[in-house]
Length: 224
Ligand SMILES: *Cc1c(COP(=O)(O)O)cnc(C)c1O
Image 1 (tube, rainbow, N blue to C red):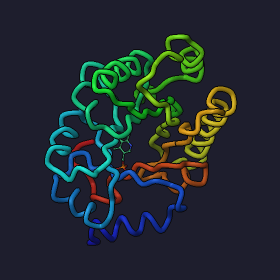
Image 2 (image 1 turned 30 degrees about the horizontal axis):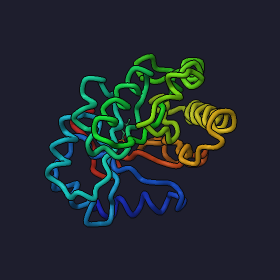
Image 3 (image 1 turned 45 degrees about the vertical axis):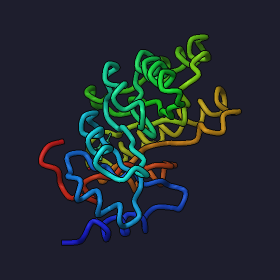
């Protein structure tokens, strides 16, 4: 069996230098995260608020914590003091809650807008129309303590590579449209977070700037 450090190095060999690696450490203990940290990894992704909070408290403070899962508005306050990027902003209500908590802490919290690109109903995310309705509103323009840094999406869980390719191309098209029509002057709007263990090579081919990889680095999880 290969070590976590070797797994990270292998993934990195497949990534162009401009693509950031988020090591998805959900369900994994602090020792394994430290092993990745000692190999130079600094960006980690978690999908549960409580788990991210205890890991933040226990682990080195220069780790950049990304919240990658569905986030409930009433839990934003627990991560607002330290979260580096909230990847799964899927409603205007959530974005406003993040802005309010960030304001209380005198921070600007970077966020990605999550889009629903998969076939599965269960996945979260905006449709393009919903996002546009939000983006053109005065209320959106008046948010001061969130920074929209790009988009995020998850492809359908399938062996059908053409389907995955199409879904990632769709997210890239959404990004390009938003960038050219609404965020052309916003330098921070530059990330396309797409690609997981099973599909990150396709995601990179389709223009990903950030991949979120868990099981390929840390081994299979016992629960999702
Ligand atoms: C768990 C998870 C990942 C990582 O999945 P792997 O298949 O283990 O690489 C990526 N993104 C999100 C949103 C996740 O919940």
